[in-house]
Image (cartoon, rainbow, N blue to C red; front, side, top):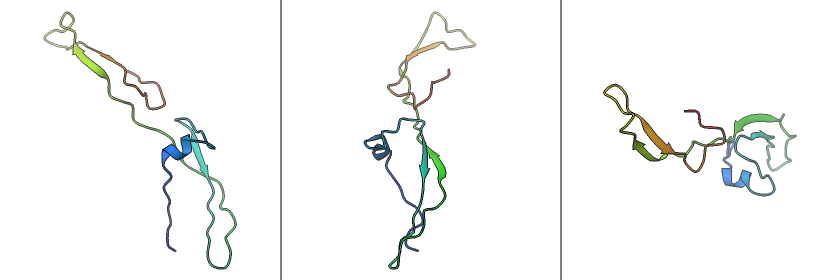
Amino acid sequence: MAATSCTIPITVLQAAPFNLPWGSSIFAKVVATNIVNPSDHSPVGNGAIILTYPDPPASLQNVPSQTTALQIAMIWSAGASNGGTPIIL
């Protein structure tokens, strides 16, 4: 056996003809090939979900009027990407 895994860049899955958005499940079939013939397709497997980490908050700032000796109040702007799901604060 020469290879037992493969890697497909997310950019390929998000481009045509697939056009998969963040959070999509990836369903795959595998075919083994040798000099005689290819095998039958494997059963469909769902081994991955397209996820990404969210971008960090931008413009993080202290709010002095709400900051006390026991807590620090902060404000920020959301990052450009939420990673495919809402960010819960």
